[in-house]
Image 1: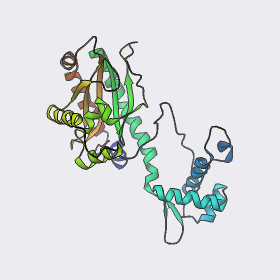
Image 2: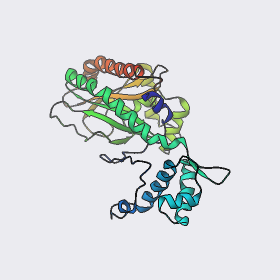
Image 3: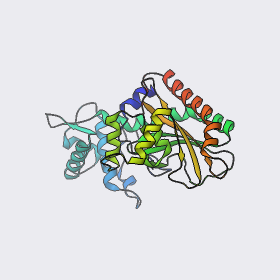
Amino acid sequence: MFFAFVKLTRYDYDVNRVPGSAIRMMSPKTPAKASAANSKSSVQSLAKAFRALEAIAASELDMTLSEIAVAADLDPGTTHRMLNTLVGLGYVERTEAKRFTLTLKVLDLGFRAIGHRDLRTLARPLLRSLVGEVSEAASLGVLNGADVLYVERMRAGITRLGVDIRMGTVIPVTSSVIGWAMLAFLPEPELKRVLQLQKLSEMPADLARQIKTIRKQGYALSASKISNGLCVLAMPVRDKDGYPIAAVSVAAPSMRMSLTELEARALAPLRKVAGQIALGLEASGGTVAG
């Protein structure tokens, strides 16, 4: 089941950009009321948009603007603006009969959350085993638009590395070794799309050289671009079609271990874990994609 969900929602996931943030899923039959929007730390217009979405979700039939306004406890003018915005974003569709209905895009957030949870559940014991074998920190990341979203992180004992990466951390994919491991195996149209999201008209020459090497050897090995004094080895988790679902990495302080030493020590265990994650995901149902 996980695979079908993730295949459907490969793009535009931007929840958890701030580490530790969360979205609470509410029952569609209990729209958020004004009490949630009255907090000084809340955005009232966002709360109203969700009330409109929840009102549509609670109805078995397509709804008119007036019906949505009543169900969501909003005035018609506000409802009109909210619906136009949601239609523009692709979460709501306007029918020929001037009624409104939800699109399948609203499934993206929930399916993506379910998919990441299942991925973490499967990967966590494997990462723990990897850390125990190589005695270095290990991470699991997925492609999140033009960024890498870290969905799991295992430290080696109490050792802290030079960068504070935790579950939910987001780093530009072109600045992350674990991101390079996924970029190298993306289909060309998706690779171009990622570069466009990073506002790059073409791939920088140094990154192009890295990508070429990674495609040839099957993994990324480099000094970290976000933390001085850190060596990183990353391996893509690829589905049966070769698509990079995710990537796993091992990181070690360069003062204690060179790139060559990290490769010799961690490459085989890392490759094994990446393969186990891919097989485990495939065994749980369907085609995998990230």
